[in-house]
Amino acid sequence: MAKNSSILREYWSGKSVLITGASSGLGWALTEALAPYGVTFGLLSRREEKMQELADSLKHTDSTFWIRGCDIRDREAVFAAVNDFHEHAGRIDVAWANSGISAPSSFKKWDWELIDACLKTNLYGTMHTVKACLNHMVPRKQGTIVGIGSMASVRGLPTRGVYSLTKISIQYLLESLSAELPFIQFTTIHPGFVDTPIIASNKNAFWVVPADRAADLMLHAVARKKAVYIFPFRMRMLYHIIRLLPQKLFTGGMRKFFRRAEKPELSETEKQAITSTN
Ligand SMILES: NC(=O)c1ccc[n+]([C@@H]2O[C@H](COP(=O)([O-])OP(=O)(O)OC[C@H]3O[C@@H](n4cnc5c(N)ncnc54)[C@H](OP(=O)(O)O)[C@@H]3O)[C@@H](O)[C@H]2O)c1
Image 1 (spheres, rainbow, N blue to C red):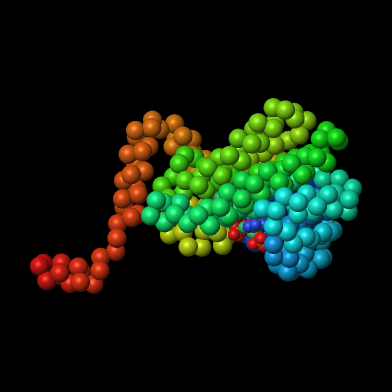
Image 2 (image 1 turned 180 degrees about the vertical axis):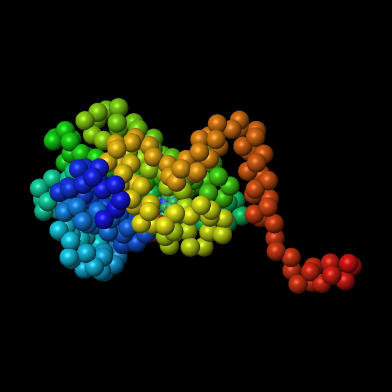
């Protein structure tokens, strides 16, 4: 069980929690971290067998697991899954809209199929989950919605424009709903780099946080009812600094970074040419 668990116990014990993207990474780590608190889980993602593997590994805990293979891009499937989970659990206390994918979107590598999948998963998938769960929470005037943004939402990052926009839009969506529904808790979390499959091929990742540590930080942030939470601490500081940079300074810095990242590897002939002239 996580350190400093009294806050966690008070907030999470006996809750009914729906998590999307529980088959991997952050969703998996969250489920593991919450399992000691006797939670009624509703786990959603496409890979049912992975979620079953996770539930089997947590059989010894007081929690129970309801699992549904579901593509969150499919609105009808999400609404049906959420309604079925609600019927099973009797209520939904927390909805954790975590499913997401990354997609590069530079001018040179513009892949419509991938971009479409990114918008539909991150943006529509989150909206489907949030709206379907709010339908059950609002009549009770009670519940918590957690949306997963990203450090990449800080501003428009080179080659990550589409991913950045899906992630900042999650914060805007929850912020907007929180004005209308003051009795619901809305928390947007912007993780820095967490050691999960989504960053496996990212050579620029830094200050990488282990997934179990990330789960612990996020569960505390929700229990403390934060509206927006950025982690780790160093990333939070960097996020606020970058947000404050005047446009010219930000764009200049990003252009330098982009040119460096884009610098082509020298071909063998070019390397030989340099060696022979030296
Ligand atoms: N790791 C990081 O450094 C980092 C940083 C910032 C933000 N994030 C965000 O954190 C969230 C979780 O990512 P992760 O790091 O845990 O990556 P991950 O290990 O790749 O997990 C992504 C999860 O999303 C689910 N998913 C993807 N497409 C889906 C779809 N169409 N329908 C249902 N579920 C879908 C996947 O499940 P199936 O494949 O089984 O469907 C998987 O469980 C994402 O929103 C990501 O953008 C991660």
